Amino acid sequence: MNVLTKTFYKDFVIQVATEEHERYAETIVEEMASSAKARGTGIAKRSPEYIIKKMQEGKAVIATTKTGDWVGFCYIETWEHGKFVANSGLIVQPEYRKSGVATAIKAKAFRLSRQKYPEANIVGLTTSMAVMKINSELGYEPVPFSELPKDDEFWKGCSSCVNYDILTRTNRAHCLCTGMKYEAKNGKKMSTWEFMKESSLYEKWLQMKQKILIRKDTEKVKS
Image: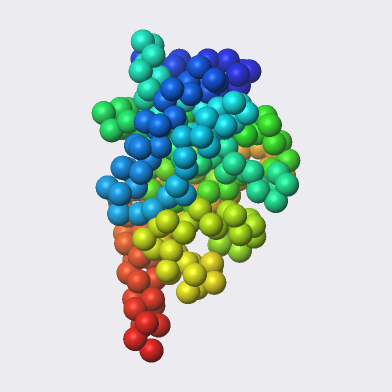
């Protein structure tokens, strides 16, 4: 299916954002900040102007109701001259969460990324179990941070996160986020990470990871 074609999911319209959606930019930015604050984490802060630019470049996906109300959003960023692509800023209005629309948005952004940058590896950093599950279904697998972009601008996006101190103290080797990557060279969807199939197991694993990293970070401060 042509990725530029509108996708209909339940009562939502999923499409590549255009200039007609620029009026939502400020609301999108506000919801991104509000959501990050509620989770107790940080995100790369973006301005309405940045979001508008992504829309104008055809590098954003938006979900709306059939009557035109904004539902969710995601955009594409590139690193190291197109070697890496990230589907960033995935956000859904609170009242529409757990509806499956986030998966539909991410899938559309993934196909758009593959169309625009077929040779690029698609990467991401997240603490969200929901996002990790979506990524896994698309073919991403967890990877060490060493397999992510070396570009300082990529990591600059982490500077507003409350856990940024952990990232810098480990020289970008570890943090509470999990790095994920889709290998473009494989030419097909990678196998789903089996560990993601059981959400209870994943939650335990994430909790253990957080405790270990926080404990190590605390010990370094005391020493």
